[in-house]
Length: 240
Ligand SMILES: [Fe+2]
Image 1: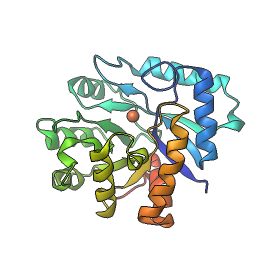
Image 2: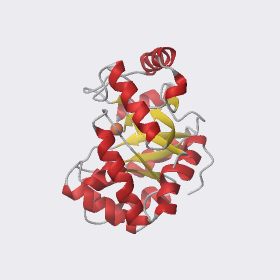
Image 3: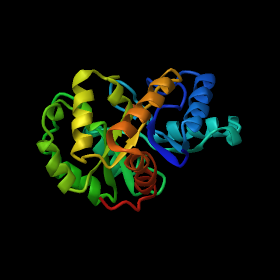
């Protein structure tokens, strides 16, 4: 199967906890292509005190990578970011220094794991006022969702969409996220799925995770999660 779109991966070398070298980047990209991905978005972390990335530096690093890579051997490449949802993010949002997906209509955000941020719905509304559909990274990894999905409802009602880390299904992030992911898949709580790959070693896990996803939801729905709907989110045409 090809036609998949990876909305979340860390293949930009040396900018966060993703790949460290050009060689790792190329191995990850060619591997994702072999798994069926036609387009992969680099989503490096922008997270204060951990990964102090800013748009100009990330754009430069991305352009450098694109200029070096033989583009016929890799999926289509584009740039976004995984934005940590804190005050710094809202400052960047005001200054138009965020990195939405390439159609400029949707944006990847992550929360802290332990508890939902304060005033979450109002803050989500601010993101939407700025013109972006919030794409919530790995909901299965948030503690509030480990055993019940209820607290996600207000975010879905507010127009957010959800992105499964497919490797969660293999227990990559522990048993609680694995179970939460299976439960939320069963509930139909996911809009799309991604790799969130950080290095070439993730490819084997991702290959098995895609098979697991197909087993759990059927091939058609798996293809929609990794393909059709992921592309619509990327291109800003998705209506949840
Ligand atoms: Fe990530």
